[in-house]
Image (tube, rainbow, N blue to C red; front, top):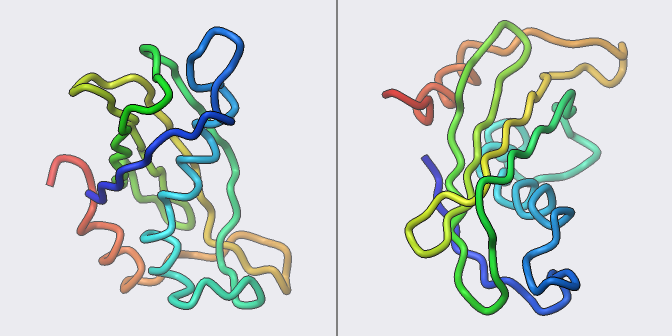
Length: 131
């Protein structure tokens, strides 16, 4: 599991003083970088090997400005050509949001999914929930 701390910015709040609901997908995307590096170590977009097929965010509590948020990132499931990343946002030791992202190993030249290699599966397995 990867953990990263974020300090919410004032511009990420809404009229009610909460972190805006559009911010969580951005935070989750930014904290998926360690997993992206399994496939493209230098993060060069010309060598990119992944596409996002689906993103879900379930809001479970309020998040507030000026108070640190911890994002936890792990792998929930590994398939043949895709995997599910599960992320959670924590503030004050409470889980406030849960995100799931389906990621597909993709061949951009042939415009189709490509099977994950055994080494890619092994890297993902090191961060599989329940291990």
